[in-house]
Length: 579
Image (cartoon, rainbow, N blue to C red; front, side):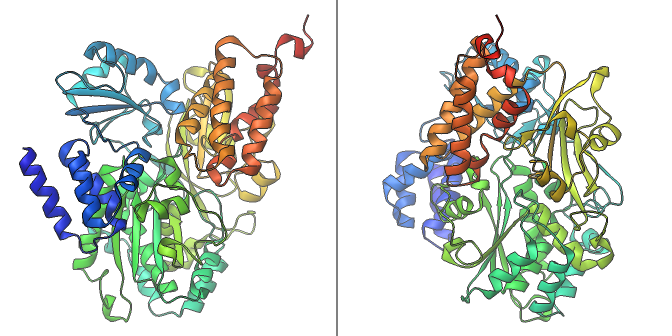
C-alpha cells in the first residue's frame, strides 16, 4: 500500500502545471489523504519539487490543525467543541467516546484503528452537537449515538432554510445543485450575460447604486472594491471567493454551496469581468469536503458549457477558476491570511495598507468577497427588481442571510430583509425558546460578536441601527441561549476558541487571548478574585486597540460586552460591597 501511495503522490506532483510554492498546501493535503499523515520523506520530496525549504514546509504543517507530521489512525474522530456544540453536550460525548474506545485524547490506539480529538468548529451549528469522522459529518449527536461515530455513519444533512420574498435562496430545493441546465432554467447566468454587454464603468456604477455591502462581516461597499481593483495600475489581477467560514455560529456558506453553487461562480465571473481578472480562486474550508466535491463538478460543467476558459460566450473575456482547500485555521478567514495560505505559507495576516485591491494575492490587485456577496452580485445584474432598494431601511441593499442557532425551536438559515427585528427572527421565524423556557441572552455576530443587552432584543437588524447601539451584525450570526445557561461557561468556550485560533503573529493577540482564557477559566471554576474585572477589561481593550487583524481586535468582544451587562459575575463580594 505504501509503495502504491508513493507512486500516487509522485504522479500528482508530476501533473502539477505550476511547480512552485503556491501548490504546497494542496500537495501536503494530498499526501495527508494518501498516508493519513505526512511522512518526512514525502514532505522533503514535495519541498524539493516545489523549491520550498524543509523549515518552511514544517512551519506550514504545524500551523494547520488538519495536517499531521506523525502517524494518526485509520479513523480520526473530531468532536466539535464550539460554544453551541459544547453547551449541547459535546464534551460529555467526547468523554464517553474516549471511555468506550479506552483512549486518551489525541493519541492513536495501539492498533492505529482510532484516534479521538477535539475541533474548534465544524460549521454545523444548526445541528449541534456535531462531529467529523475522517471526511464524514455526523450531526445532532447524543451519548446514545456514539456507536455511529465509531462506525463512521454519515448524517444526511437537512439544511433547513426559511424566509420571505427570497432572493438568494429562491432556487433552493428547486434545482439539482450540480445541474447547470437546472440553474440556467431558473435564471442562472442571466446576470453574467447582461454584464458582457455593459462597460466596466457602467457595471461599477450599477453595483455601487445597489448599495450592496459585503456580507462577510466588515460590510464594506462592494462597488468600491470593484472600482479600486480596476483603478489599480496593474494588468494582472485576481478574484477570490472566501468560503473559509470558521466563525462559531456561521454556516451560511455551507448551505449556499450545497444548494446553489453556480450562483457563486456567476458572481465571481461578473467580478472578474469588471476588474479584468483572468484567474480566480475559491478557498473552501477543509472541513467542507462535500462542498469541495460539488464545486469541482460545478467548475467542470461550467467549462464544458462555455462559461469558463477562453473567449467565454464568444467574447474577448477569458477566466479560469481553481478550488483551494483550507486545512483547519480560523485565521485564514481573514482576507490577507487567506492570500498567504494560497501562496503556500502559514496563514499570517498582513499589515494594511496596502489593501487587497492594490496589492493582494501574489502582490496583485485582488477583489475578494465571501460566498453570499458573490451570489448577491449575480442577482443584482440578473434582475434590477431583485435589488430591493427600500428607502425605509438604513441599509438599502436588500435581504441577507441570518444563521440562527442555539436554544431555538427552528435553527437554520433565514433570508430576511435588512431591518427585520431581532426578536422577530427568534420568535416569529425561529419559533422561540424550546420547552417554554425564558431567554437568557443572545450573541450577535458569532464568537467574535457581542452579547445583546435586553433593551436591544427588539433592535432592527441593519448596519446603521446596530452601529449606533454598539453592536455588529458580523456574518449574520444569531446565537440564542435560554435561562438555564451560564454566561461564564459560554465565555469559557469562546475564550478557549480564540486562544486556540490565535496565529501568534502579534503579541497583543497571542498573549491577550491566553490571559483572557486563563482568567475566565479560573472565574468559572473558583469564582472571581479581586481585580479580575479590571484585568479582563484591560486585556480586552488592549487586544481591541493593538492587535494586527480582526481576530485579535474582536476576540474580546463577547467578554467586554459581558462585563458591561453582568459586572456582578466578574467581581467578588468585597468588590460588590457585600458583607
